[in-house]
Image 1 (tube, rainbow, N blue to C red):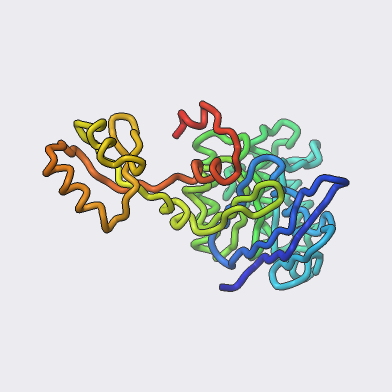
Image 2 (cartoon, rainbow, N blue to C red; image 1 turned 120 degrees about the vertical axis):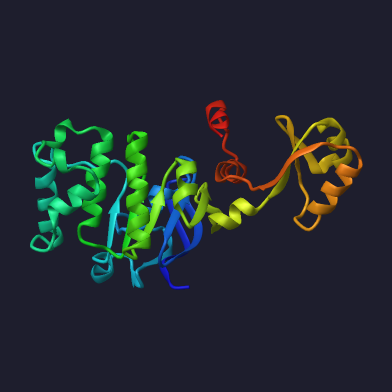
Length: 303
């Protein structure tokens, strides 16, 4: 599996604070790769190092097969880190033209096309000083893509967007990966959105990598059999520590091989089973478990 980004022992300290602490990470070519972590996990520090904006204290990193800062490698990537800022007196169209000239692709870039791709056609000639946060994010994404990079790093691309805008951005990101072969590295606090769009994820905490893998593999971990039944207390007494209540249902921590025999035993024991299906852990629950972050009642209700 070819890697577009590799880090080995990557460390960045600010006085006594270790923003990155010996990070080993390999991001494969192709698809959408999510980088997750609570505030202070080191995500933005990692991205700034990869873009050559700051230097690591220790360790090494390569991007697109070249050392960080290698001009040829850097021209093959695009990025939007945190909330973008543009000259407020410029229009959206002027911003992209200016940045295209700075990138050396002024004569090759189809500005109307990229404004259309991010949903800013109608705002193309408006000054950006009046743009909302979501509109600035859209413009930042267009700026990161107009040189047609092979790798793009997007930090919170849907920040400030309404649900339709989030859906549009999700479709754009998926199309970049599946139709145009762009490797997308995505950081977001919207865990449900990450689960929907990403192929693989890395979970960081306190500058370290704590979990990595495909979304399918991670959410399959802890897979349980959900039983909608008429006698939950009776089933819980049978399952012992392998069963937990889930509303009016019961989640049974058994293997797929043991599922049929459990259902048979319960039916023979007089238990009415209305539904039985396998459910996996969602990315949100894995995130809170791995990072030790406190789950808010709002987050729990959203699940």
